[in-house]
Image (tube, rainbow, N blue to C red; front, side):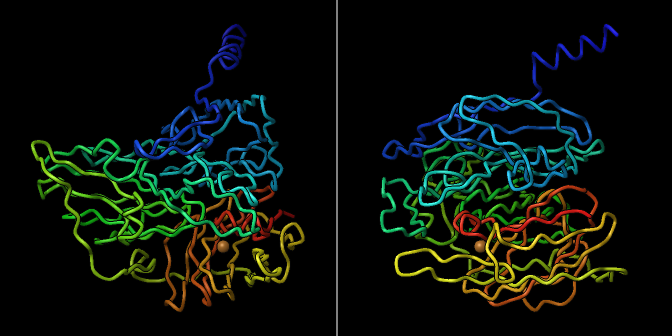
Length: 432
Ligand SMILES: [Cu+2]
């Protein structure tokens, strides 16, 4: 009795995890200042480490001027705390503090970010600095590495451009790795012979990114925080918005190197950081890799496994222009959120989603509260074993993903591009 009371008192006084949402002046370089909103006074926000299945108390204090909500991306949480008002998570009013318990699962590299509407304000929602890393550790985590590094790629509209023309197409003039432009952040310091596990997050509101580390190759071991059936070596990584790649890098080329965006015009706006070996000095060196090559299927199991008793659902993505100077409206099966259908799931049933992208853009599709298995993308052969929570569906192609309805509650399915979700590219699944 006394112990239970003591635990309750402790829970009231000291949350395990605390987030403060507040205005923040980001200085990606001495010449750039971006007024934004951030978590705990830093961009990216804090790195939280949690143990899989061990409940933690979370406190979120909103000191910003807008209602906020924090989405725990990649976790299987109840709808009430997942962090999307479309699922029923309450918004946190300006000045308010909320507190809840969260049991993190599954294990892996997750993240958290705001899940609000930006509309024409290209500094709000995911355009701003509200994103942070979450590592959910498994009890039997092998940890066969010497150093772990977390990197967030982000695009910013640094100038005060406004958007009077009604255009919702952002133009980015500042890009960063962990909130800093290339050459202005602390270098990643390594030693020869180290095995460095790089956890890379694309927190960009809208952009797909390609990255490389000059002088080195990546051994891709996990996508979206989930171990891949077939680890592969790659010169370059492709990350759609909200995707994560975890890759081991053998530090076997002493020197001072650039990790950065492969496309020069983007690296020139800042997207890069320096990797420096102990004892090495000099100007950071960049090496331009060859062609941009990436496909999901190289990481899948060698033999595709069929799934019995799978229900098929088909979704067609289209856009509709609203008139000159205006952004198009995005539609799933002909309807924009909140008019989109609400497909009904039966708990325990397995579903295959056929995602037909009939538009001119590529879309990073994200399913909340569940993981899906990527089965086919853009004319690939059938694959299995690749578990993700975001899949990039290229223009004019079809992707097929499968998931088991194992977490009852309202479940948001949407394009992770901020300007697309703001323009109706969302739908909610509900359980029978
Ligand atoms: Cu989209």
